[in-house]
Figure (cartoon, rainbow, N blue to C red):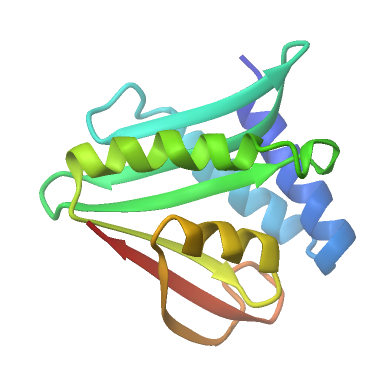
Length: 150
């Protein structure tokens, strides 16, 4: 209980503080995450959380489609208080073990400038597939699509 709000809060605060994202982004995360959570449990879909004192402080979701063999990595975030602790790497390890069992391809959307996250994605075999200026998160950024084929 409370994970949707916790994950939306971490995203909203981080991206507002570091990138100037606003209410549009927070609503997008909360709405899409709530829709995803309503499908759980479901084959090909999973949500991993790291929690302390009953509050989620990190998350990563896999939203997979068995019909296509493609999975979407979503809502990967680690609270600033946990950066550098290895929690993000642990979440990625679990998620990649999951996708390796069920899918032939995994993709994610991010944007230019999130260098620590990009380094982690590349360490797990993701490669930059495309990039272009866009505003899918309500703020103009250079959006990037990374793909991992396995």
